[in-house]
Length: 325
Image 1 (cartoon, rainbow, N blue to C red):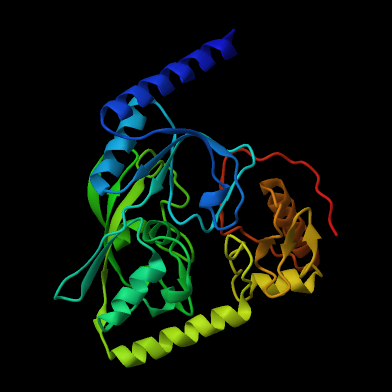
Image 2: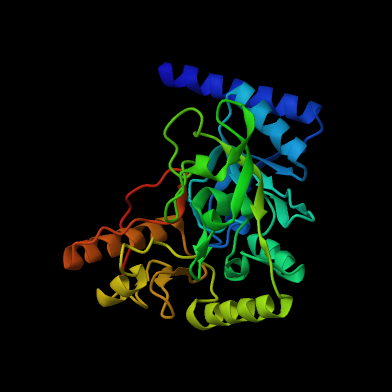
């Protein structure tokens, strides 16, 4: 009886949200598979899907969902994320807010749905230094701000001045970089702990860059891109699976325990870089989860190191056994 009452309330909330969102002019899609929206090409369906092209629309649809009691997940470039085979309950918003604005005082503001690599290229084109490391990094500005993305010795925290954040309590404010409590691949928003950070959404970010020689910046970016092509797989993946432990590399540890090139279900520890799990074509989230647990167990047993996943897990995950080859 309790279950039936909860289900009825969830149905009422969904109907209320759909009615309100459609009345506001939003197009709602139902039961949409999410695999095509992730770089892993993995993920079950979402109950509801909305595409947001403008920040005003993004804010409005989030507020409508919250008022109706509907869970919200914001999906940008789809990298660094593993969506469960069961999919996502509630609402998924595809963040297509991508405007980038440069000012004369070497400040660059990008909406959260903008490509991080595209932002880096734009800065380089205008002779602005500080984001060259990002030309080889997939994903969007919003996800990069939340996860303190980085590569080649640089990271978001190095140049972020502030970000517009709609927090979990519905307050819209400019957060200085210090409010994110940045650490290696970490911010307060990546591991939310209170009502302010739970459900908080980055709307835009402003970076302070430095004037530099454009030719030198382009040469540096070209070296980063060449390094990526030489050392990372081209198959579908979420990017690096684990954070590098202090003083070491996750890829080295995974290779040392004999997993480089090993297949788990329909995914594989890449023969190019062991800290990448690639989709062999029919991969499922359960395969990836099993591969992750296998790597953690072996590295812990052999080296006493606990690997911490860098990717975000979205949806419900079971413990189904998967064949290892």
